[in-house]
Structures are given as C-alpha cells and as structure tokens.
Amino acid sequence: MNLTQNMNHMEHWADKHHPLWIDIVRIGLGLFLFVKGVLFIQDTSALMAIMQNSEFPWVSAGLAHYVALVHLAGGLMIAMGLKTRIAVLFQLPILLGAVFFINPDRGFYSQNTELWSSIIVLLLLIFFLIFGSGRFSADYKMREYKNDPLF
Image 1 (tube, rainbow, N blue to C red):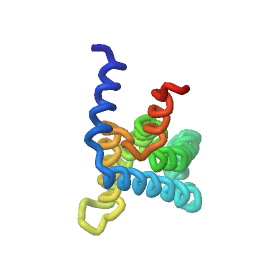
Image 2: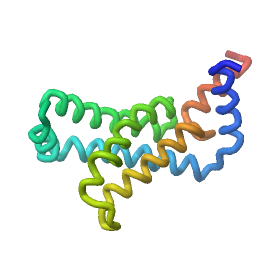
Image 3: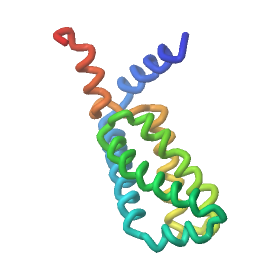
Image 4: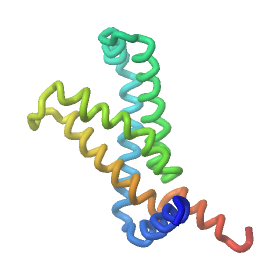
C-alpha cells in the first residue's frame, strides 16, 4: 500500500476508536497552546533576554516570531480540529526544544512546572499526531461534506 492509502486507513481506524473525552482533551490542548502564544507575545522581557543571550540575534528574533505564530495559529487549529496533524507537526520542534534544551536547565525536580507541562504537551501532541482530530472536528466535517452524494 502506498502512503495515502495507509493514511486513509489510519484515519478511518482513529475515527472509529475516538471517544468524546479525547476531543475535549484536544480542544483543551489547542486552547492551552493559544494562551501560551499570547503570553509569549505579552512577555517582551523574556523575548529580549532570549535574543540577548544568543550568539545570533537575528536567528533568535525569527525563532521567537515562529514560536508565537505557531502557538497562536496552531493552537486554534488544534482546538478546532482543522488540519490537526499539520498543526501538530509545526508544534513538535518547539516542544522538543522546550523539553530537551530550555527547561532542563532549571532542574528535574517536581516544582519545575514548566518542564512537566512541556512534557505533557509533547506527549499529547504525539498522541494527536497518531490519532488525528476525531469526530468533533472541522477535519471530520470536511470529509463528511466531501463524501456527501449531493455535492
């Protein structure tokens, strides 16, 4: 089987085995990422510290804009279930960087909530990359509309 047939088979299986509570978790994850994007934009002092500590300030500025844009747009897309897997793919590098490069500097103790929230979000993103957006999503409605014999 080629890749598109595998993706369609996986999509069909995920839609049949996708309870409502998972959709609620997806919506919560998307809203959480959106809020993190808003907070990242509002905290300009942290943004300036990231740029000043970098050897390449132009890369840091681009990276900061990428993080903010992806969290804002991708968070909304994940919450709505619109092209969820693509939105997740854009989120993954950010969360991998947060888990492995940024937050471990603060330590692995239980009070480092930023690290633990990054780990949980990363695991949820991997889950939704595999299982997709579910029945209560824009993706599902678009597939349903496309398969309607009247259109």
